[in-house]
Image 1: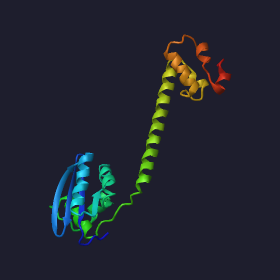
Image 2: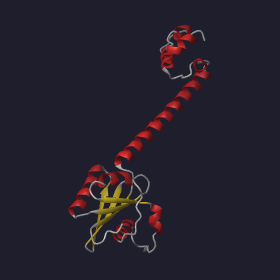
Image 3: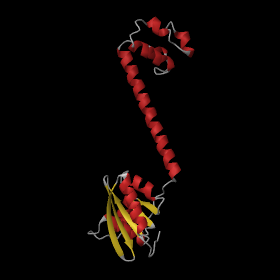
Image 4: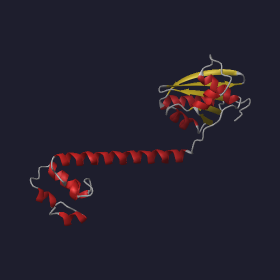
Length: 198
């Protein structure tokens, strides 16, 4: 992506700060902003006020995501793989990362990573969260079943799902002090009603 003589920017993102190097008409400006939303909005305003149109950000950890998400609507932003950035020849040792990124962007020497559209990213995040919650639910169910087994409560031998509707009702009754198993068995729902004797 060759930018030519337009205004371009390189960002180095850390947990608490974003350092931006803005290059326009042969001069460089450096700005440091916190990663809180109001400061990221100030970064966007600053870039807009000086005519920033192109920017590149290094993909280190997950710190780049809020910066990318905020700025992608304001200017053309590319995400650069850190490994690719380190492999570009000609780096001077005294050049700071944000200046190096801006310089490479201005000379069209950066290879952009593929970033799915915002809707796809949000969907991926939601699916990932759903999978995490499902794994946590399974882990809790296994811990409960192990605890029941150690207390000689064989609910898991009768109910296919200890945390199914019947299982939850019986566990709640047990926690509330319902004294005997036959009374708790009366709480069986659906197909489990046929297993009351067990």
